[in-house]
Image: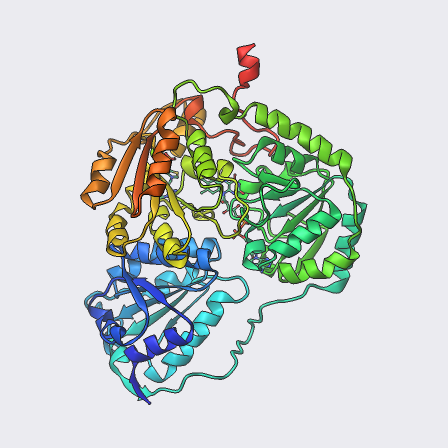
Length: 569
Ligand SMILES: Cc1cc2nc3c(=O)[nH]c(=O)nc-3n(C[C@H](O)[C@H](O)[C@H](O)COP(=O)(O)OP(=O)(O)OC[C@H]3O[C@@H](n4cnc5c(N)ncnc54)[C@H](O)[C@@H]3O)c2cc1C
Ligand SMILES: Cc1ncc(C[n+]2csc(CCOP(=O)(O)OP(=O)(O)O)c2C)c(N)n1
Ligand SMILES: [Mg+2]
């Protein structure tokens, strides 16, 4: 079969099972776009290439498949960068295809030339510049393999215009991929597994730290069986939400800088930490030399670079989490940790007594109440995609969920502007599910142009905007740690409801807590996309995320919300 490079791109994407790609055409990638309609692949025309990468990322996280983004050379390719870095930090599998100046022009500062393989080298798992059309099919095959296996991540393929135009005999690659120095791990070392089991069987106050790796290895059910057998409470990282059902009696909640106080306390008092598929991010550990001082530690991760990187451990197991848990299960004794669980529940009760949602309504619209209402109205069944900032933390703290792959958020890079495009990707991946983008007024405006993509694709996405007229998370730090100087964080905003209406999207505005439920119910029953602006409290205790571990402090040195019961007494 004679095929052009352009045709080979689509042939190979079809063979890799790709059904949808996100992108924007341009001079250096037009040849690839030209035969697109001959293939059964949906192209979603985004409004900015950053959003092609975010949408591919959201698609990947919601579906467990590889997301694909396409851009032209130069500015198209460089616009992808933030999206690629976001995907790398959260180990999300995407493949980006960029057009490039013809091979004979490379290095001559040709029109729209940018060295995207050089630029993206540190933020991709791997990248390629294809200079011979005969290499293209195998390169694409290998790129998908690298993106989805081992620790997933983004792979970029840069495709010069003449390679897209060139013809060759197309033979779909059949051979198994063998890459020197790259062999994704499976089972863990049996001796280490035995040592971990001994620590588990001896522990009195164990805590599991469940992370994103649980979801990526599909270990949710195995984890639950393990947890129930050994009776160990489970704390979650931000990206681990969904790894274990939050309605389960052994579920704690989120750990870390904005984690629940009782969860952090349990970690600090634990005698054994079992870190499963999480990488001890600094937002998770707080001050390292005072982190869980009494605890022995077991860490299971499939990336050797993560073991003993931040937190030294007693037993490090290199392996795929699901397989390691299956190995561990027979050696772990059926146990009861009644006393420990009662202690943790006692701390949980204290946390609840300070919770702003358990305080009587005072007419002020606070974001925790908005998110909790959203969770109750949707029975915790929606896919929630957030942007970055205070609303992100409130979404994590108050949208309790039981289903995996249902909270999609930029954790590692913390990319404002991620929410709307990633939600578009998630809605396309899961057309039958209700998807809510929860965004802040600052980040929403970084990628707001994607409302155009939303209407062009006729997606029923729902958007909840938490509008505090501030770059709220930064303002909170200024209030707490920078003498209350709100330097460059106040935002003069447009009328958001009129803005979305300009796109033909139905919008509601809520200023009173009494109207919250009705607005959510109306937005849910509306057939097309829907938008609600919640004008929330802007500053002060009701406008801050609590609790908070101050930067540089230990996990148990949290700043707590002033205790309403004490204050009222
Ligand atoms: C404003 C803001 C505030 C934040 N506050 C918090 C906070 O309070 N608490 C919090 O938890 N996070 C917080 N974060 C997020 C934080 O920065 C990290 O992104 C997050 O903690 C990472 O979670 P993780 O380690 O589970 O996931 P990842 O960073 O995705 O790491 C996953 C780990 O699992 C491993 N893995 C992957 N696949 C497998 C497999 N098959 N088997 C075994 N291992 C595997 C990987 O190698 C990696 O080490 C915040 C982020 C922002 C932007
Ligand atoms: C692209 C980018 N720029 C800057 C930041 C720093 N930053 C983190 S949170 C935040 C404020 C977010 O404001 P908003 O979107 O209104 O959300 P809020 O915190 O008010 O809920 C900023 C500026 C970032 N994370 N990402
Ligand atoms: Mg804001």
